Length: 167
Image 1 (tube, helix red, strand yellow):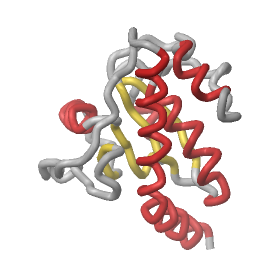
Image 2 (cartoon, one colour):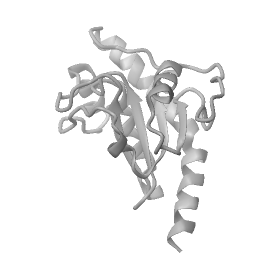
Image 3 (cartoon, rainbow, N blue to C red):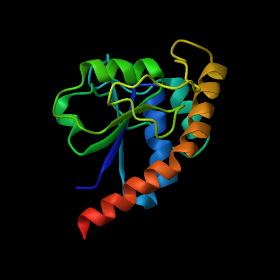
């Protein structure tokens, strides 16, 4: 099984699905799996119309996305859980099952692992555009697109480790 990265936000309908499709499109050649989930959601909700509009204007497809609650079984094989904010990472850390042994970070602090209890460094956070204007969605999604690029070295190292495990 390929190592995977799980992007995390509150409802899994605005920010984390965008991070998932952007990462898959941008880093798919690395052989990693990208997924998303929510801390406080119900499975099965479709993506927000603002995120769909942003994504479709850039050839990313969110239409088939359905929200998923983060659960212990969805963490199997996950090497990194990446929140959209420090708060998402901290809340996940407080709730995470003992079976999870991967990294915990947030999009604005590439590669910084909060799993051991370390406080997160200052960094940009991706504010929730839910209920806002299309301009709010465009700003949040544009920030995701920009910040995710800084994770490339982390994903590349994870891919190399993954390759070594398969040999």
